[in-house]
Length: 230
Image 1: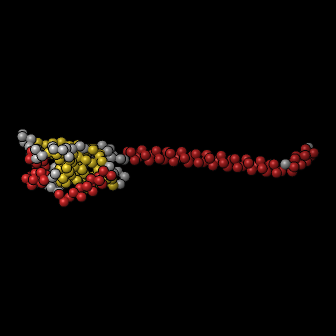
Image 2: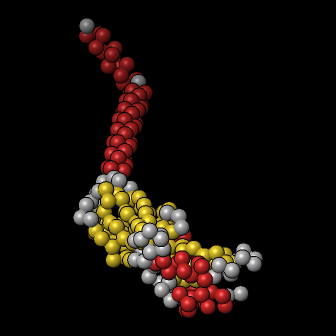
Image 3: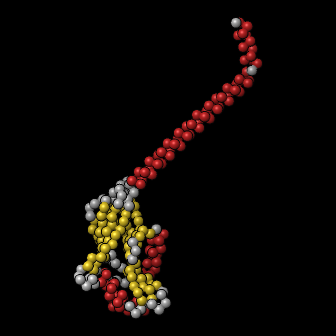
């Protein structure tokens, strides 16, 4: 037994460097494996966290829809009002506001189909009505009685060209995460969400043309001004 112990000790002394290297390799490999597993766990945790954040964000992202209806004041259909209803289909919102509106009287000339955009003021009644609800119908607004004036102008320039209104609004509200959100929409003649870039382009264009701004109620003046455009 003593001889075996002595032999084993001599074996260890002869192979000391080899064993040290082997031990270092084992320790290093173990360390790399543990580190890899730790990184893998951390990555999985990040994926789960990102997924949960995405789900929470989706659950708290409002889905805004705008609908337009015509309200007839008499049987002739001349005196009528356009009404827009703002509907929130997801999450909850508060402090809804129409921040800004830009509108044009758009005219397509009959002679050459060239389109003219004349800046228009106060087309919509931005002092709309909050319903007090956070979901469903949250806000209602209209264009006063501009439809009648628009019809009279259209009739007055019928030989010159065809007219329609192009109107755009900036809305804002506070979402369920208490963050302020801003969106932009075209509301006539189409209803559709527009990008920030489109909004900025409209804003700059309207500003450049603002010296020629008109109000729909000035029917005779507007007809004369429109026919001056070449």
